[in-house]
Image 1 (cartoon, rainbow, N blue to C red):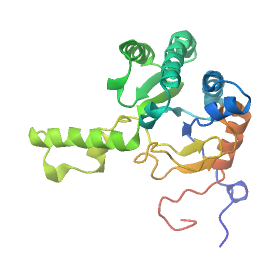
Image 2 (image 1 turned 120 degrees about the vertical axis):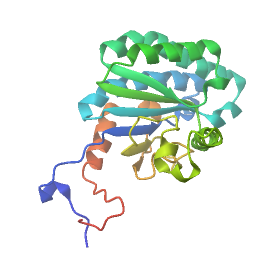
Image 3 (image 1 turned 180 degrees about the horizontal axis):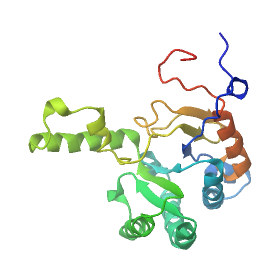
Image 4 (image 1 turned 90 degrees about the vertical axis):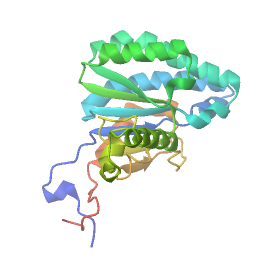
Length: 247
C-alpha cells in the first residue's frame, strides 16, 4: 500500500516543533577553498545567526544545534582553542539580540572540561534568557550521547543508593529526568549537513523516534530556504510511532 500523502488526504500538515541539527562541514568548506579550517567555523557561526532568526517563522519552537562533541577534543589544539573562542564571542555578541528576539538559550553537555570564562558566559546567558519563550535554543558543547547516558545512569545509581529512589521505580521517565535535556521535548526532526549519514552520538535516547534528513550542503552554505524546504518535506511524512500504516 502506498504511503498516505497528507497533501491530498485533508489532514493538516505536521509541524516540526523541535528540530535538531548536526552542523557538519565547516572545516571541509574552508579547506576546499584553500582557507584555514577556523574560517569555516566562523562562517558557520554566522549561519547559526540566520537559522536561529528564521526558525520561529517556520513553526519551530525548539532548536538544538550540535556545536562540539566529546570526540572533537582530538582535533588540533589550534582548532579547539579557536572553536572555544568562537563560542565565547557568539555568546557575548548575540546576547542582546537573542534576548530582544525572545530566544531562550541553554546548553547541554559536560561543562567540566570547558574554560571557566566560557562556563560563566554560558551560565549568564542561560539565566538572562530563562523567561523567554519565542524560541528555545539549545547548544550542545562537549556533548556525547553515550557520555550523557552514563552520567544520567550515575545519577540514578546515586539516588537509589541514597534511598531517594526504589530500584523498582527506575523507568524511562526517571532516566529521562536525569538527562541533560530534562524538560526539553524530544526532537521531531534531525538534520545533518555535509553529506555524512552518521548520527555521531547525537541525542541517541531523545531521537529514537525522530525523522532524519541528510543533506549534501555543508553547514556554511545551509540557507534558511533549505531549512524551510526540509521542514516542509517533514510535514508530508506520516509518523506512526509503531502503529499500523493509516492508523
